[in-house]
Image (tube, rainbow, N blue to C red; front, side, top):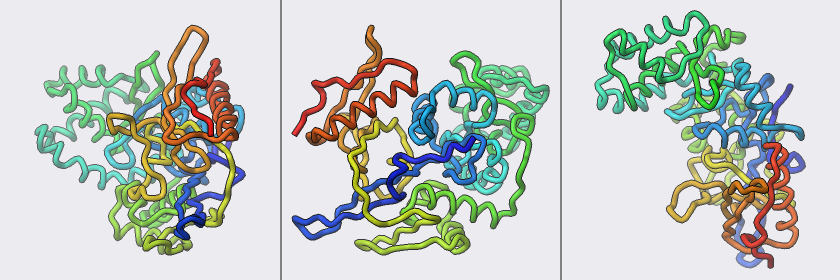
Length: 373
């Protein structure tokens, strides 16, 4: 199954530029429709990796961009089957990645993630000897095909005389992931587990470094573009030199607007496209977090200033939302940043129904939380 994703398949990908008639200045209306690739069986046309530190939210991020009929249960099954893996492949952050991609991506990015963790390793006194010993113990514990929780892996270390709990244990598991020892296993109830990487995801594709660099660059700018070089450096964790080299190998197109150079690959267009669609984005959605420069799409923030679930209308962040469980099902409460049009209110209700179909639950929009204009 090809889980290539789009927030709106009727729009061209990328950031759409509309002329603001009042000021004659370009208004940046982002419609980064392919901002994440659902990393299942066929991922070669996806984004490569999808931020996933909030597991349930990341499943909805995939579901938003999958064809009609996508459900939470289907994505959960793909994860438990090992078609989707959850690991620290970009930056020191959880990401979903296709099993077919994990080996070449780790070989490309692991050294940079290790570098990002260097201070934490020093702070928690995790030198290379301790990290290597822990990885060997993890590999031994998982070699029989077992899927073990982090606590169970910690117990394996304790029996061998390695003290590791809390953040120290988390860092050791991340290190073992980066070394290609282990990855996510099947869930055990509500608990996440780890599995032996090679047994869970046998290598099916081998890329030399330049091939891997070109592939990751192409995927990012095809699914997230138009985007800047700085955006790609942020998302991938690669050096600026590597990012430039990747662009040189992809034949990406660029356009300079307001002092920023935007790149895109493939058929992603830079022309304008308008529609009345509304999307209920999960927290940490790629639409908002996969870019270093946020002038085109401001981040959705809650009252405490933290990243929140965003309501996106025609490409703009128009508010935030939260789902409250009631006796009659889920009620989506929206906090608008501006009044919604009548068309947008209708589209918002459809977005709620889509969320309900994904969860196979009754979902309604709280009428009192949306103001018409």
